[in-house]
Amino acid sequence: MKTINIQNLIHFITVIAFAILVSSFLLSCDDFLEPDDPFGQIPFQEIFEDEATATAAITTLYAKLRDDVFLTGNSSGLSVQMGLYADELDFYGMPWEPNFEIYQHLINATHSTVQTTWNKAYNLIYMANAAIEGLQGANAINENLKNQLQGEALFVRAFTHFNLMNLYGDIPYITTTNYMVNKNVSRLPQSQVFENILTDLIETKTLLEDNYIGPERTRANKPVISALMARILLYQGNWQEAEAESNSVINNTALYSLENQLENEFLVNSRSAILQFKPKNFGENTHEASTFIFGSVPPPYLALTNSLVNSFEENDLRKTQWITELSDGNQSWYHANKYKANTNTGMSVEYSIVIRLAELYLIRAEARAKQNNLSGALQDINTIRNRAGLNNTTATSQTEILQAILNERKWELFTEQGHRWFDIKRFEVAGQILAPIKPAWRETNILFPIPEADILLNPNLLPQNPGY
Image 1: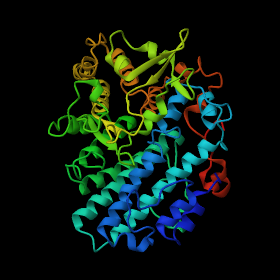
Image 2 (image 1 turned 135 degrees about the horizontal axis):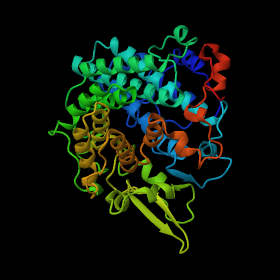
Image 3 (image 1 turned 90 degrees about the horizontal axis):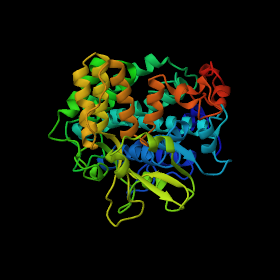
Image 4 (image 1 turned 90 degrees about the vertical axis):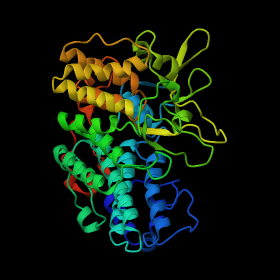
């Protein structure tokens, strides 16, 4: 794929139809009005003059996350790439594939993943900004619908910047489609990026309703924003507010409850699901199932590490329900089996989960532990453990409880959107865990490099991250 600088992309986007521009710069992507646009390619200025096309524009933002950017369950998403980067996944593909270098910690500022991840994320941010700007002048659209759509676009913008920051550190925070503004953007300190993200999400809360749009959990509502804010506030170290946002979701029993049976956790109608991605076509299921499940050994592409599988406590139902063993008679390999439907089943039975309730319990546990509310933290940890068929944790001190939380996050959230990598980075134990198993590990691998092509076109993106 040809490398495309963000600023040049924005320049071209402003002068052609929105549907045409996106497909011009993203190979093999869908039209802007997807998945079921009856109108074909619509000029940008007309998209937000109609409620149906405006809604299609916003749902396409979710489709880009599902199929192309960060949260996708395919081999270019965080679940795979950061699982390989950390200690969750072993790579069995070909050594010339980009994910081999991710697995080996051999990336540099010209690596294809470094460049395409950055480009695709900022492409999506541009789309969100264009939607926000288009909706501001959309006088023909019902005000309540306009608020909903603007809130969802802000949500996508904030979420995408959050993931960019977690990978690259200091980044530009783009809030306009104005080429003259964007062509010379500078990187902001992570503290400022956090504030910008939270500012967007606070505004989003004023625009969205408590309930979902329709019967499914595939578009953001106010609890989705609270759940994402809880995660962000935890990463920021704002323990009190992280606990408060977690409380607002956990206590919303009208919408959410932990599934007592782990096999129901990732189904379409899971009450643990806070936000899901609906498959593109009727009857299809998740990218994750197709990516992680293998039926022959040795694995053709990737498998869970033995260290992850062996770390589970005896009788942990998450190991028996969410992991499958395959053997050739002499050696065993393991694949994630959270999502079990890897074919078209006639009617979709599983949706990819973006945020789920168990994470909120673990966020609240960590926030409570950091505030020295150890009994509250233990209550949340044990809620997750007991559901997995385990006894209460034996941890008692703050240090032990935080280690228990890190372990529970490893066992509960494995192969989900890079949680493990971001956790060992947050807990400052990445080197301790990875140095013995990744020969090329360096402490500077905590961050991806800024793409060299973008720095050459915009020196304001300097300085480069250390080590590159």
